[in-house]
Length: 80
Length: 277
Image (cartoon, rainbow over all chains, first blue to last red; front, top):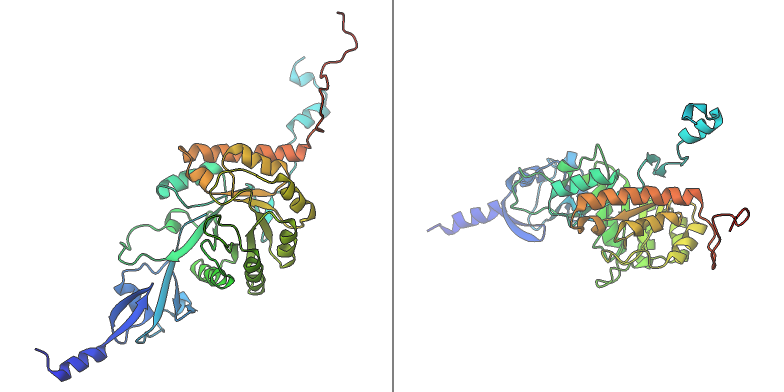
């Protein structure tokens, strides 16, 4: 059994973000680059929107994620 | 008479190639007037072979969410169809508002390292996939202002085509028939009217089913044809791609050659004079 304090610490270490419409539980203090690593998304041919704003590829590392963030990760697929 | 005995001027005329200006889009010239899609193929290999056989230099792609949980080692479309070799034309398929279409183009530009050429389509109805032309015009204006090179899918309305050209679109792409219908060029008169007024390339987008449909579009004087389903859903996509390549080329040559007049009655090809019967 975790103590109340330990649970509080855990809760502070955890945040929830929405990635491509699904909720994800993540460690606090991770940036976009680390998110892509965790989700095993290739970083080459994707584009990312963080809370409705496009984040340039070169700035993935600089964008620290916060609880409640909404992230869209898109790629090119077959289409006419 | 052997060929060497012919006058020099004849020989020169016979070796002359057909004079045609290549298709120019956003400052880049293309030898092929066929643009193909990358949807509905069984796999990347089938798509790539069709692309090669079609001779197309431009291929459309859609922008969609990455499938999370998918193996990141698996090749993606752009690993197979190289943006270095082909012009990638991201579309806004599936967008029903100007806002979504603009957002999709912005994502595409980021995805393709600043690439500005896009195929704008804003749909109005799920059953017919007919374009919502008012939203299309709003999106076109915003995208042009934002520096995009816009090729725009629209209905075959000649007045709308003018409005979209005035909005700064670099190519106007009227439908021949609904997307994926394979019904051919249903209203050639409208396509002719659009061509009459146009100062930008007119490319028939959607509706082509077989090679003759593509030829008809080109014989009308269109600058190109964009198709996806006609090739992807053929029993043999590679062979249909090759047929489309020829159809586009022959249709173009027929247009440049200038057709004979249509007549209601026959006109004998052999002279009457000199008949001995």
